[in-house]
Image (tube, rainbow, N blue to C red; front, side, top):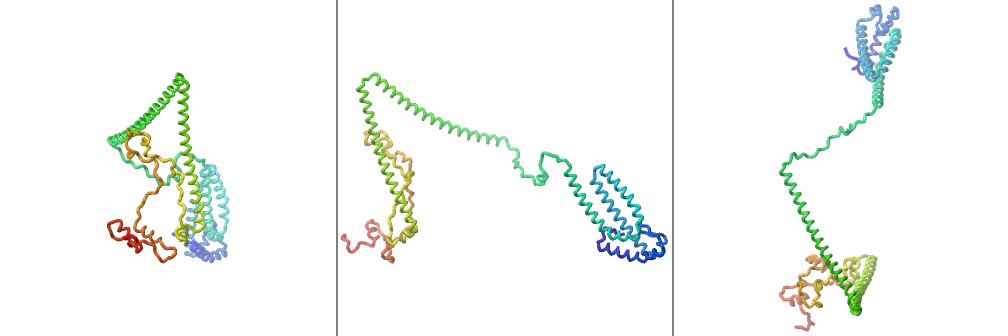
Length: 410
C-alpha cells in the first residue's frame, strides 16, 4: 500500500479523476435502484456493492484506507504540536472542550453528507491540508516567540551567548616552574644594579656638598671682610676712609667705562649685521623675481658677486673666550705658576664654520665645466692638467704652459 503523503500533486489529481470515472456508472445504477449511501465511509449498501465491479470495490477500499491513514497521521501531528504549544492547563482544557464540541457537532453533519460530496472533498482535501499545515507552523512560531517574550529576563553575570560562541583567547605562555638558583641570580643582579645607582647618587651628592661648602667658604670670607670694614670705619679717622672709598669709586668708574666700550662695540657689530641681513633679503627678493639662481648663473654679464649669507644671532658669539687669558694674563702677571696655555681646554662653543670636505675628481670636473668666456663662448677657460715635476716652481710654470715670450726672467 502506498501512502498519499509521498504522492506528487499531479498523481493525486490523476487518482481523483480515475476514481470519478469509475464511480460514474455505479452512481447511475445506484440512483436508478434508489440505494442509499453511507456518508461516513463513502461505501454503499449491500445492494450497491453487489451491482459494482470487483476492481471498483478494491480500488475504492484502497483509496479510502490511504486517505484515512494520511489524514489520521496529520491530525495526530497537529494535535501534538498544539498540545506542546499550549502548556497552560486552562488553555488545554478550553481547547479540549472546544474540540469535543466541534467533534459532536461535526459528526451528525458528516453522517448526513451524501456520497457525491466525498469526491469533491478528496480533491480539495490535499490543498486544504497543506494550507492548514502552513498556518499551523506560522501560529506555532508566533506562539513560541510570544512565550519567550512573556518570560521574565534572567540577568546572570557571565559571558553572553555570542561571546561563548567565539574561540577562547590564547593564554599566557606557561614557562613552568623556575629554579631557585635562577631566581636568586636575577635578584642578585637587580641588587647590584641598585647598588651601582646608589653609588653614583652618593658621588653626585658628595660633589654637591663640596660645591656648597665652597660657596659657604666664599660667603664667609665676604662676611669677614665686611666685618673688618665695619671695624675700620669705627676706629680709623675719616680721611683714610674717604681715600679708600674714593679709590673704590674710581675702580668702579673704570669698570663701567670698559663695559660701555664693550657695549658700543656690540652695538656696531649688531648694526652691521642688521645692514647685511637687509641687503641679503633684498638681494634674495630680486634674484627670485628674476628667475632664481639658475638665471643668475647664466647672466650675460658673467659671474655676479652677491652678498654672502649673514650669520644668525645664535651662531654669532660676540664675546669670545680668550684661551690666552683663561688662567692668567701674561701681560699683567709677571710670574707664571700655572700650566702653559697649550694645555688649556678649548672654548665652550665651537665656531659656526661648516666642516671641511675634500673635493673628488668628479667635483673638479664639474667645476671646470662652469668656467667659460662670456665674450667668446667657444673659448674654454679650463686650466690644463699639471705636468710631472718635483720642484714647486716647475709645477707652477708648467701649470700655465711655461713662461711666456714677454717674461723678463730667464
